[in-house]
Image (cartoon, rainbow, N blue to C red; front, side, top):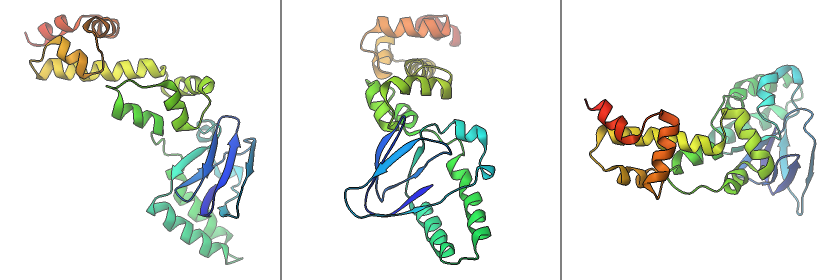
Length: 212
């Protein structure tokens, strides 16, 4: 686990390439091949964690490492770790601190690209942008996404759009065209095709059925 103190550290793994600064920390799983470099002086707190303190399943979900926003919570954890690091007899305290913060690392928190989709699914979303958010290569991102969510990015977006459309069909009197445009489809035909594929019924039939 790499926590910033000052400066920038450039890290590259098989699937990620990022400049780690004072706004983020980075968790590097065991046996993850990586390189790092710096152009200027920097200082980072590196916590070397024993494998027996890590859950194998969690590590499989962090291929290539995971980046976290360095918020006030992590700043407090860094402060405690630095204090304990100055005490040569405090290894057990450091272990306890890591166990405390481990669930922040492996709590199954929603990856940033999925958060982005959840907030912008009604807009045009570029696959490259999603891959960039996770610092993954485009060729790997779709595979990573499907392994994590069990559907492709496109299927995930379609499901969100149809779910929102069903809410609008149920709770508003908006036309099918208006709803299709609200959830991200320029043409009614495209929306109807996706809706029917997922729900096995057209939007019009769905509305008629639920309002009987």
